[in-house]
Amino acid sequence: MMPLTMAKKGESNVIKKVGGKEEARRFLESLGFVVGGTVTVVSQTAGNIIVNVKDSRIAIGKDMANKIMI
Image (cartoon, rainbow, N blue to C red; front, side, top):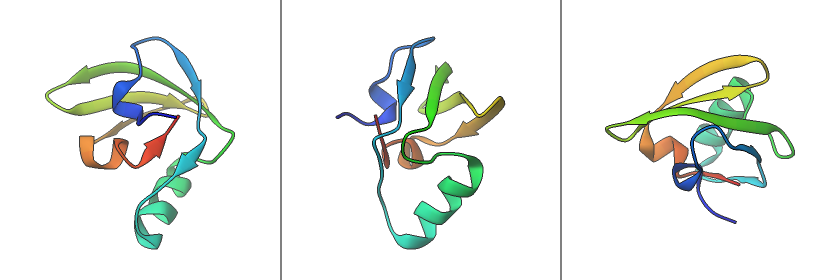
């Protein structure tokens, strides 16, 4: 298991765990970051990450991405 920030660009990964406080977990789950879901990193610049989740393109910060384990 590793944080989403360590994922390679273009590689499809399965979400194994969503960490952080309850509020942060609920927020990430509302965006589509659920355990068992597939996430693909589109690009990574200055700590911000753009990912594809459930046919949506979402940008999240490095601190949020570190809470998503793949």
